Image (cartoon, rainbow, N blue to C red; front, side, top):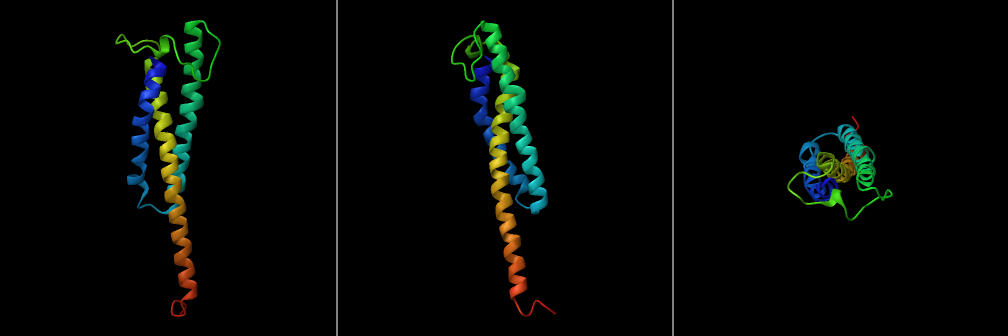
Length: 132
């Protein structure tokens, strides 16, 4: 159940990650840059701290060798009895989805904000009336 939850909740996490645009669109580039690190950390935690241990635990439960993306077994069960490691799968899916999308969105906003501030500085320098 854990891998099933991870797979189906990653798009939900991606929708949550898109909401980072709402939080960061009016911030300056320094604050947006800091938010990029938060989103990247969330992605790294999701992949290396939650998803990889999930795959290792699922391999141990089923007595199979470890795989990066197992496609069958108890961790893929869709049974209503919660199955193996469903909470870990939920956390991994949400962190991976929100972290990846949040990082992409904040990176785009950061680049746009930086370009805007560079353009405004160049405009101030090129305008003869701005230098008093």
